[in-house]
Amino acid sequence: MNPVILNKRVTSFDFDNSTQQINVTCEPTYGSEGASSYVADYLFLCIPRRAVELIGQTAYDGTLAKQLNNSQVKLYLESVIEQPSYKIGISCDEPWFENCTYPPRLDTPSGAWGPTVTDLPLRQIYYFTPEEQAKGKNYAILASYDDMRYTSFWRQFELNTTQMRTTPLSEDFQPLSKGTPLTEGMKRMVALQLAHVHYGTSETNSGFNQIYNSITEGYYMDWSLNPFGAGYHAWDAHYEICDVMQRIRKPLMVANSGLPGANQVFLSGSAYSNDQAWVEGAFCTAESVLTEYFGFSPLVNTTTYPLICACG
Ligand SMILES: Cc1cc2nc3c(=O)[nH]c(=O)nc-3n(C[C@H](O)[C@H](O)[C@H](O)COP(=O)(O)OP(=O)(O)OC[C@H]3O[C@@H](n4cnc5c(N)ncnc54)[C@H](O)[C@@H]3O)c2cc1C
Image 1 (cartoon, helix red, strand yellow):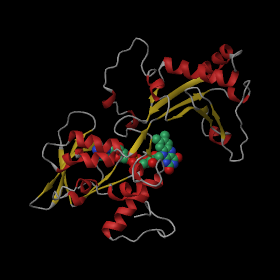
Image 2 (image 1 turned 30 degrees about the horizontal axis):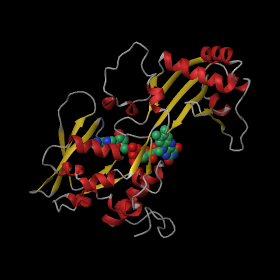
Image 3 (image 1 turned 180 degrees about the vertical axis):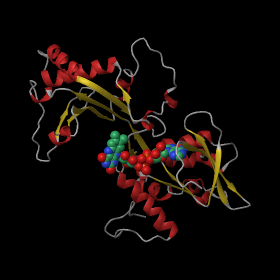
Image 4 (image 1 turned 135 degrees about the vertical axis):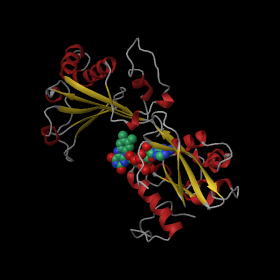
C-alpha cells in the first residue's frame, strides 16, 4: 500500500469486530471521486481541534468515529481556543521602506528587519533582510502578520466590491493552497495602511502612490479556515490542563463508553500540547503517545524535559 496518501481526508472510521482493526474511510478534499477505505491496527489523528470536529460531523451513523460527538469528548476537545491568523505578503520593485518618512528599524541585534507593530489591521510588518532580498529581484515584505485580530477585516477584501461569494467559507480550503493573489481592493488597503504607518498623516497620499505603484505581486493566507480552524491554539480557562493533555491522547476513552476500538484511536498535535503554536508541541505529544502506549524509548531525558504536562 502507498505509505502516503495525498489529497484525501479521513471522514469516518469504525471498529471491525472480526479483525479487531480500525476501518478508516477517506474522501477526496476536492472533487467528487468516491470514498476509499483503509485498515489499520491503530489510528493516529495528528490534527488540530477543528479537524477532529470535522470528522465528527462527517462520521457515518453508528460508527466509532461518531463518538467524537460525545458530550464528554467535546468538553475536552473544546478546552483549547482557536486563535485566528492571517498573513499578507507583498513584493515591491523598490525599497521605499528604506527612505520613507518613518522607516522601520533595519539594524536590530538579531539581524531581523522590523517588525513594525501597529494597531491598524496590519498589526505587524516584517521586512526581508538584504541577504534574503539578494535571492530575488524584488523587495519582499510580510505586510501583515496578523494574529488573533482582524481576520474578518481582511476577509472582506478577498472579493472585489461587486463580487458575490460562491463558495461557502466552510469549504474554502485556502490554507491547503499556496496563497491567493491579492484582489485590487486588498492591494489598495494594504498600501494605504502601509502609507499611514510609514509616511504619517500629512504624506499619506503621496506615500500611498509610492507604495501602491511599487507592488509587483502579493498573496494572502487565512490560516483560520478549514481544515485547521486556527493558526494557533491556546488553553482555555476553567480546565484542568494536565488532565486534558493526558487523556485527550486517547480521545474516545474520555467518553468512557467501553466501546471496542476506542482504545486504538490516538490524538496528538500542538493544539493540545505544552508548546502550542510550535512544531515542537506536535512532536512532543506524538512522542509521548509512542513512549507511553507503545514502549518506544524517549529521545530526550524526560525527567528534565517532560513531553507533556508533567503533573498527574
Ligand atoms: C502562520 C504560522 C506560522 C507559524 N510559525 C511557526 C514557527 O516559526 N515555528 C514553529 O515551531 N511553529 C510555527 N507555527 C505553528 C506550527 O505550524 C504548528 O504548531 C504545527 O504545524 C502543528 O502541527 P500539527 O501536526 O499539530 O498539526 P498541523 O500542522 O495542523 O497538521 C495537521 C495535518 O493534518 C491534515 N488533516 C487535517 N484534517 C485531516 C483529515 N481529516 N484527514 C487527513 N489529514 C487531515 C492537515 O491538512 C495537516 O496537513 C506557525 C503556524 C502558523 C499558522
